[in-house]
Image (cartoon, rainbow, N blue to C red; front, side):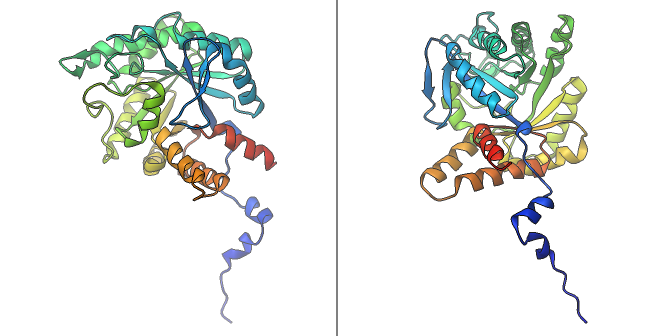
Amino acid sequence: MNLINRPRRLRLNSSIRSLVRETKLNVDDFIYPLFLVEGEKIKEEISTLPGNYHFSVDMLEKEIDEIYSLGIKAVLLFGVPDKKDPFGSEAYSNTGVVQQGIKEIKKINKDILVITDICMCQYTDHGHCGIIHDYDVSNDETLNYLAKIALSHAKAGADMVAPSDMMDGRVAAIRKILDDNSYKDVSIMAYSAKYASAFYGPFRAAAHSTPQFGDRRTYQMDPANSDEALREIELDLKEGADIVMVKPALAYLDIIRRVKDNYNVPIAAYNVSGEYAMIKAAIEKGLVDERSIVTESLTSMKRAGADIIITYFAKDMARWIQEGR
């Protein structure tokens, strides 16, 4: 008698498929990005990121209440200042929009984990992620400014800082200034393997951070490189990173997997603006089913090895998970 192997037995209905499902999304997996702008009574939809908004600090309460009610416990803050200069001084100002936002969110809900992006591109008049000399970013001089930004965020009440600049040595510089100023408990989520990607376009429009000359290929990673990502991860961990990140996510699932296979540390994946915008455009044209494609995309990131997913779909996915319970 010839026996037929029948894997389909475990696919017969939704209950058994759920029972044997290897990878499951949880609301605790998500971090939701927020864009803060100066001014009052501002809640304006971001044209390049439909369903996401620029918020003035006074308009955060309803948004934070909604996020928390959905079970999302963490937000990642990006600031969009009115004033820019060569040194990005609004990034480390005690009255900067992110610093104000941190304080306001902690007033609204002290249990929300507040993570802040540490970079200079939104704050500099040239749009690059550091101090410029001769049309190039001065790595070591920039470290002092990044450290100042991180310290100002910690003083405002940030729980975690997330350096996204890709300067060499920035994790060590930030860890040192935080420790030296009694912020040893403020953790670091490093954008460790951040690629010079074409998927960032919608974000740059939202954050007003497009470079005014050149590009960022001298400091962000070459999309063709994989081994280099592991070297960057190793360096950031040695410098004191608590969480490492791969950015973007969908086009770099292999990188997420390699990091997972090589390091027993929490791994974040950033489902970036271009990935979000492409899916939203396909949804709007009726080409794909929204819930199915979003769920499949985010599941692929977790299946690849991500423990944490930063995504503009966080609120939608949280609602769908609640509905499925």
